[in-house]
Length: 328
Image (cartoon, rainbow, N blue to C red):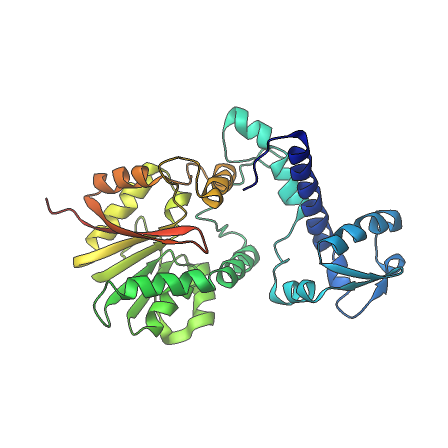
């Protein structure tokens, strides 16, 4: 993360924010999608010509657009973003509108409220009352978890018995469980009904499916490993402790609970991705945060668990924390 040491550094940061707003605004207004069929004159897009002529060069600088005189055409990367759904959740008015309320959050605490005063918190990242939003969110997570799921599955695979039973707890799209199943493990996925429906479409009978609320419903088991991928950051310490206690009861003797998350080191300021991600948790959860390893160790100990090793992925800047029952 670049340091802000002089005024120009701050100006560059603000320019980047403006450029991000241009990208999201073009996506939200459908201007990128309007170019899927081929080049078009900016005057033929359903927008203000002066505004389009002002912002199109910014997108050229970013490599998202190409211009031939007054005609705009998509760069190959932008076309692939549209086809894969990268822009599906891009809403400049929603994102920037909520981010503009950060001063309120700093005074009053999160989550952020919308224009009508309603809190915009989610249930572990999912708004179950919005099925289309759930599917779009799952698409994004699935698309971005290819490398992390492979890394995570390989590390777990080395720790559990061949063909061992594993649970992808709150695993949403199911990619982590599927990677473990492909390595020969008996893999189950537990999540809310909209997420299970999505995962069934993706993985069919490669996984076993359990629907419900992981704070109240039977988790099944016993399992040789229970994976909580990107779960703990959405919960406060008390709920994390409660969930770990429930998961511990579903473990086989000697089994592991594996926490995959972006943990912060002892400095409290690194890695940068985990630190910045804490802002998302502040804005959209009641008590979530990016935890330090020391905080996670304390929470685990209160649940009768001890840390038995960690693995760090430099590519994704996330860590795997292995927990076992503390028999001392």
